[in-house]
Image 1: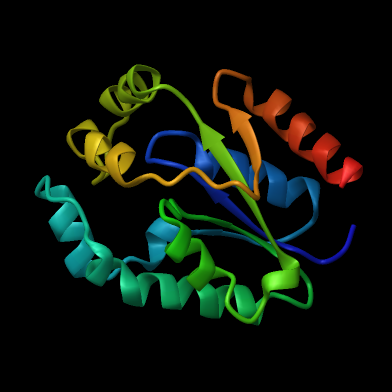
Image 2: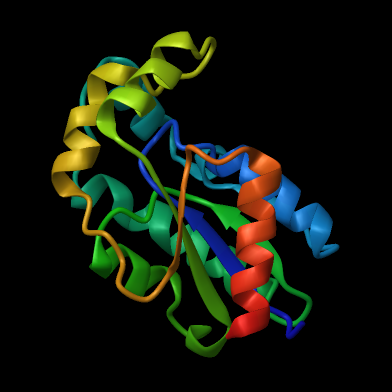
Length: 164
């Protein structure tokens, strides 16, 4: 497999971290959780129930793009929401030929249940609606339903990569 930067994307609660870690292990690549790169101000804002806007995300996306560029020679998996098309364009700047987006998708109610059961995370189900409202589903991505098990999701991703 060519050295690739995988962006595992979707609204909060779709399993980006779980799938990202499994995909990284499968491909012997490092994994980076985009949540770890949010500025403290963004985390405070989300923890208080306020949605991020484009300005809030600007530096965060730049940091994730820098991370992708630093890892383009050996590949990496980066989990981040990448909700809008212009966010994805920013993420793949200077690595276009190496970037592959994997969109984990699911119904609002299914994801809300996951978020309501999640503990110790600043992103609550209260912000889920705002993420669905701004989500621009990608047209150039591997799209997988979250109703599959993590193992099934990885197998589907690998199968689609072989067919591309």
